[in-house]
Amino acid sequence: MSSAATIEKDVQRLPEEQGKKLFGTAATIAALGLAGSAAAFFVDKQRFAHSWLVGFYFLTTIGLGALFFVLIQHLTRAGWSVAPRRHMEWVSGVLPFCALLFVPVAALAHDLYHHWMSAEAMKDPILKGKSGYLNVPFFYGRSVLYFVIWAGIAFWFAKQSADQDAAKKGDTRAFTGRMQGAAAPAILLFALSLTFAAFDWIMSLDPHWFSTIFGVYIFAGSVTSSLAVLAIININLQKQGLLKRVSTIEHRHDIGKLLFGFIVFWAYIGFSQFFLIWYANIPEETIFFKRRLVGEWQYVSYGLLLGHFVLPFLMLLSRHTKRSVTVLRAAAVIMLVMHYIDIYWLVMPSLDVNGAHFTWVDLVCLLGPVGVGMVVVAKRMQSSNLYPINDPRLPEAVKLQNL
Amino acid sequence: MADKRKKWEDEPEEKVSAGGDDVVAAADAHAELEAEAKKPEPKAEAAPEPKKTKAIKPAAIVAWFQTPADLYKACEALRDAGYKHFDAHTPFPVHGLEVAMGLRPSILGWIVLGGGFTGIVSAFGMQYWMSAVDYPLNISGKPLASWPAWVPIGFELTVLLSAFACFFGMWALNGLPKFFDPVMQHTSFDRASNDRFFISIEAKDAKFGKGRAMLEKLGANDIEEVLP
Image 1: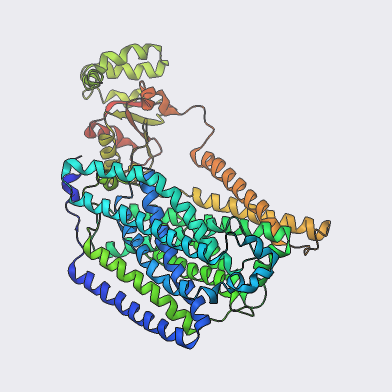
Image 2: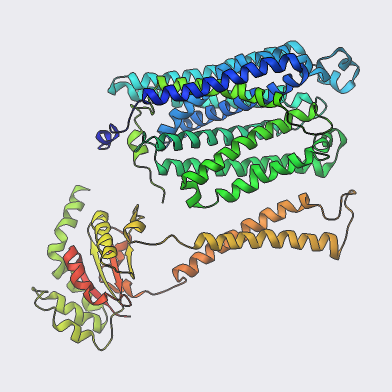
């Protein structure tokens, strides 16, 4: 294609100085967060376990959303998203490190999941009935399996993409073909592992309660938050004047559209889950929402409705705001904050039964995993090209225009 | 394909004779105009034309271009020359043409927003009035005004009225339904849905008088004035 010559003009590498600056910021946050988390462990082990689960799961879900993006672009043979796909490959690179961050959760599992892990649980007929699935060895085995699947998929796709960058011109199509072929089985594994991980780590905090749509709810939040991260990466790279052709205002507009769509999707799934349980009003199901609709937790619940749906929905409704750096970035930051509150709202009521109260332990347990994630992304940004330089769909990506 | 393309390129040269047959079948006033164009030196004959059309004022001036790129450039030129009431007619959407034509963003979005807002407000208002005021009914002990139960209807009415506002708002903005438009009288206008890129300048444009000269300068083909 004729665009090949013009594509060369985009900077392929992150300037060293900017990479170092970003890495420095990330490392500082990670060091502060991890040191604080270590202190929190000795001060209040019970609270640390729950807060760390929130922070760990916040980062993991963002990584999973990014992995989904990579897979779905290959699966749909998307042309517009060549550069954003590389950015999401960076973000999905946090998943192998999430396995390390899971260690405190695994070690403190008895503090988190004592409702079904303790010996007394076997006296409860409902939990006894669930013990075929909810038992300690199977729980750990499944957790290991999830990380093998996620880290494996994330690593393989990033590796193929990086090898394509280094490949000779004639060989590049084979890489794209391989990734497209592998994306189909990978997305099946992804969907199942994400769903069961959500059941195991979050839903089992309240082992009597169940919701079959729970995995989809987590998925919706994952994609929303990872698209928010993508929007921030896109905006910042453009602000540095780095990507002028492969990732422009047109690509930002598309990211904004996806973000808007998944904000609506989250609300749709969240309300579907609430609506059926609220309407049927069966005690073992309703307890989950009962706890979250009284006292201080009700303000968090209504805050989610407004902040995770109504506000960003109105913000991103217009074409002009999706294309605006200021509004899209503001919406992306709001979505990241709200995604944290969403996970917090899922986990913490099982500890703070009598009302929400945010403490320093929650803060450091957020900064730790987030800092680690930023370090990983900063490293990946420094070590790879800013977009897949040999992707056969690059000319298509450059031509993108929104009618 | 190559043969066909070659044919198109040849066409401007034979346009005088090719146009002739169609004109016979056209309306009388139209045929007179065409007869003028038939003569070998159109520029020399430009003067008598306004005299002929004085009786019935033309509604628009219509011409066509061979490629979307030519049309795009012509639209830019007209926009920059200060033309306000002109339109492009193409077989397929041409990317970025709205920028070249200097069109402002459509207000359709606001109409749809109004429709959607009406939908959600009327849905919640109606359900509140029905289930809590006019015919209070205790359903499984829930409060009479239980907003979650209203959401599905609220959603549906929002979507329904948004869609209506979008569909009929588009009609209103485009002046639809419309069974006739003067520009359709151009001899070869049917090819606007096939392989030619038409441009029309409406008579209500302040610079309409200079339209023909402008289009000639831009290299437009078959420049015709069409009657209302």
